[in-house]
Length: 95
Image: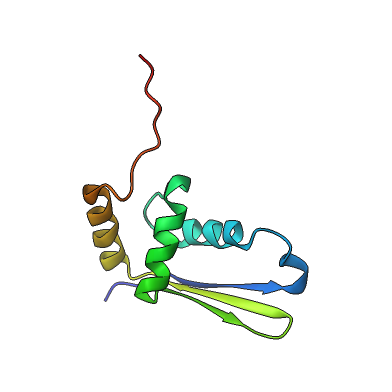
C-alpha cells in the first residue's frame, strides 16, 4: 500500500501578520512528489480544500493546517488539470 504524504503546519499569533498562504504553499511543495510551479498555487490550494486533502483548524492563538496527499489520485488530478488547461506553464515567448 503506498504511503500518503501527510504533514501539519501550526501558525501561532506571531505568524498571522505574514502571508499564511505563502507558508502553506511552501509546505505543500515540500511534501508533494510532483514538481509544482508557483503559478499553480491558487488552483492547487483550491483543489486540496475541495477534495478534503487540506484542512485548516482555527484555535485560540494558534491555527493548524493539515495536508494529506494521496499520491496516485493527486497525480491523476494534476494531469487532468494540465490537459484541461487549468494548469499551465508560465513561459514568456520572445519573437
